[in-house]
Each structure stands twice: as C-alpha cells, then as structure tokens.
Length: 161
Image (cartoon, rainbow, N blue to C red; front, side, top):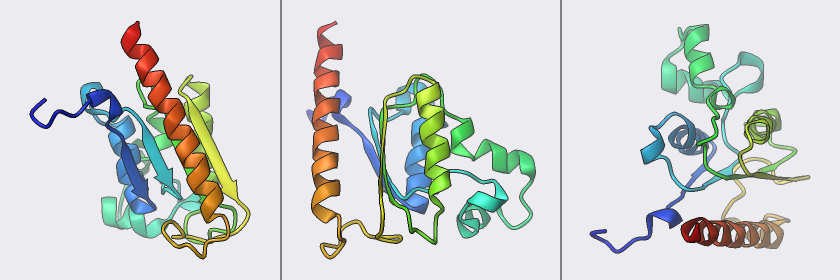
C-alpha cells in the first residue's frame, strides 16, 4: 500500500542458482509471502546428485549435506496448490544445469494443478538471457510477454470473483 503497488501483480524472476532462490520463494515460503507468479530461466531445481548443478547445492548446504537436506531443497518436492503459476525458460544444450531439473519441476506443478508453461529452446547453452545474439531472443521475449498477459488476465478475473 505504501508504494501503491497491486500485490496481485508482484512476481519473482530468477536465473540459474537465482532460479533456485526464486523457486524457493515460490514453494518453501509461507503462503502469504509467495509471489503471484514465477519466471525461472534455466533454474537449478533439484538437489539429487545426478541431475543437479552440484556447486549450487554445495554453496547452499555444504559439501557434507545429507540426503534429507537435498530432498528438502529439491523444489519439485515442495510444490503445493499454493505454488504460483510458473514459466520455465531453458535450452536443451545447457551443460551447466540439466534440463531434467526443470522438467521435474514442471511435472510437479502440473500434477498439483498449478498453471505451468515450459519453453525449451534447442540451443543457447546456459546464461543466454539478455544476450541479443541468442538465436531465440525474439521468440523467448514474445513467449514471456504472452505468458505475462495471460497471468494479468487471470489476476483480473480472480479479483472480480
């Protein structure tokens, strides 16, 4: 209220390890503190050893983390009906964060009934957002714009209920 911001239009966006942070705010945070939507670019999602970015989980939990800690911070395990609508944007040739991580999250969102969209571009590697030389720069921006418009319409419809 202080800043005259509509709380229904507050979302979160994160990239790579920051995608894990944004995903954590969307899943682990108290329901009243969760954003209304999430935009995740090539996010680290899961902590299982064979399908994650190991450094992210080492920085988060240490080298001697337990399986229980890894499971807790594996965000595909934390999705609930109150997880906000999410768009995942990634490339299939990302050698830093395996795409399976996002696929697991997407499947968990859909299984829980949360609106989810995923765009996997054939190439681009890791860290392409904001680089106009990214082959799919126009496509991802158009997809993101369309998705945000859909979220805006959904928020307006929710207000009128």
